[in-house]
Image: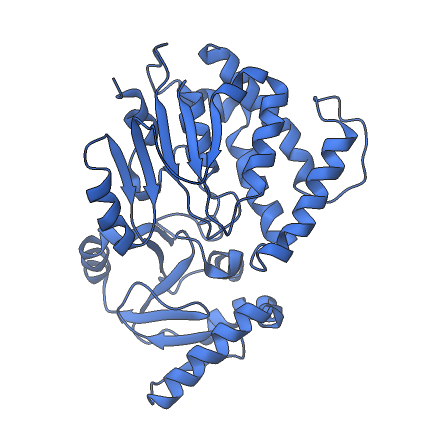
Length: 348
């Protein structure tokens, strides 16, 4: 299986997955997708919430939509053209995948297979249903992928490792996998920079950066930097369309718990019934909480971002990632800024 064959299979997979971005009746798609596969995957999308309540149908289909964007023919080809793919014996690459948002491990899955290597994936218990089904769709397009994809319970017989986890688990991974080439990802989050000149449309788009996937992704904004004197009601107005999020039981539990803790500690809060805003320079905030702090000038913004760059996944704002696009990374946006393809191609 050469580079072109692998590429064409993923392009075809993108065409297939495009039919799962919405829940629509079956029709003959003429893209290698059978009615049985279509019905089975749609059923799985609907049932996954039983096993993980965070994985709502909307969030799963949103994640699939992001994958489809990556697998567009032009996008995929332009990305691959930036690298020198050499056909050589495939390496066994072990992956410890996160499970915070649906199909979050797909990019590693794509990188390993498109580079000609084999993947041994240890899935998170929170997201262990969707990627195996997607892999079946890929194997149906080219059965040779069956020898290159393995989902495992215990990582062994690997020649390189990509692992994602918390800061604590990252320290363990660094030690445990020290004797093989590895990429270890830590706990990052994202920041928004508000200038005060944003349009209503930009702020409305920004709401998705905060609330999509319930704020559980590393590209979700957990901290907002605002100019001194900024009226935070501008944000609450933009956030209002997401008010129904508090009807989700697990989100509501987090909201009630954090509110109670802050009130007991007499922490000053601003809240609107579904989001708590706390003045705090910390990057990370608990689920249902958005930290904010005031900045006087651009130099302070730059200094803050520079000081915290090792913990920031992306920055949202007028001069940064556009509002509403935090959770729409391009295929070349690598987690923790580590070029996964370059790492894989460097394996001897």
